[in-house]
Length: 371
Ligand SMILES: *Cc1c(COP(=O)(O)O)cnc(C)c1O
Image 1 (cartoon, rainbow, N blue to C red):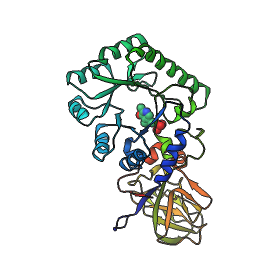
Image 2 (image 1 turned 180 degrees about the vertical axis):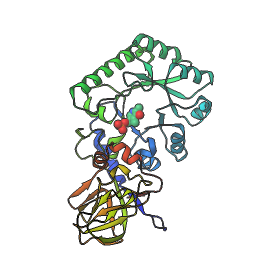
Image 3 (image 1 turned 90 degrees about the horizontal axis):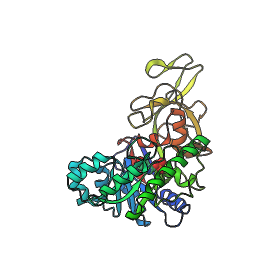
Image 4 (image 1 turned 30 degrees about the horizontal axis):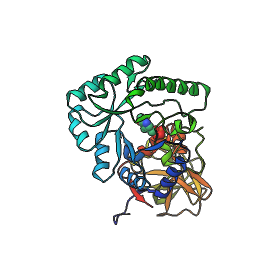
């Protein structure tokens, strides 16, 4: 940790990320490889650090969301394939080539733009099989394949991929839709097979587990790498666990009388005398304001409920039931202590979101400490 004190920090256990990667790798089919998804600063865990650790394990395929994230990895020595999963303005075509980045082609008109810009970088076509976000419409596979064929030589196309939008559920409707997406993708892939594109892939963390009979050159592994679940019901391969612990300090503890209110808007009124701890974390750090009067933190292996509204830089928690809690000790926001745990998935449940958003929302004010 830096010499100047911080008020809230995450400890990232790189060994756990290594283990998650290796545990997930054992689930792969022969010939399948992991493409480590490092977008959004590796879901808040630090893209360069995670990329370096995985490179040392032999990972040669990475994905990010945009060209800035890709350049950060390249400029910090990450070798191998780096796929940019969304749009990059064509004016940056030369940079894509210079740094050997692989650009996703989001549409036919974007392919034309890249071609007109003289883009020499590797490219992969996104194929839309039902998410309706990016990619060529695959409802007419012949038409879709025709577009890929037309640009196969103009641009340096070395792959196609699709994204599953409902593979995180075991509900019948989701499973059927996933099967439909895969059928649509395979129809397009079959029509361009003679192009011998080396990278044809359709699986994310959820798909890699739920659709393990599907042929896909890569599993684009995001959330499971960090030990979180694509969905609450998800059967995570055993041993995979969260790599992040989030901590803060108790700055003071006070006793309040019955009938006194706590925090902005006086949203909590003490029903009885209470012991209240003030913690040095708030929504500016990424501790969601939706946790007001709903969330909890862990102190001395016990739950301390959030009382009152989450402020920008501080929160208040009830430590009436934790009489040994003392000022200046640490409180755990995400992690395990004693018999109590709170994962990003647990926190997300309470806040009405998903674990992905909890870790991505950690702001730059939260120091990353690597174990
Ligand atoms: C983010 C993303 C992934 C990773 O998804 P996870 O659910 O985190 O495994 C894979 N593919 C694409 C296209 C993505 O945008």
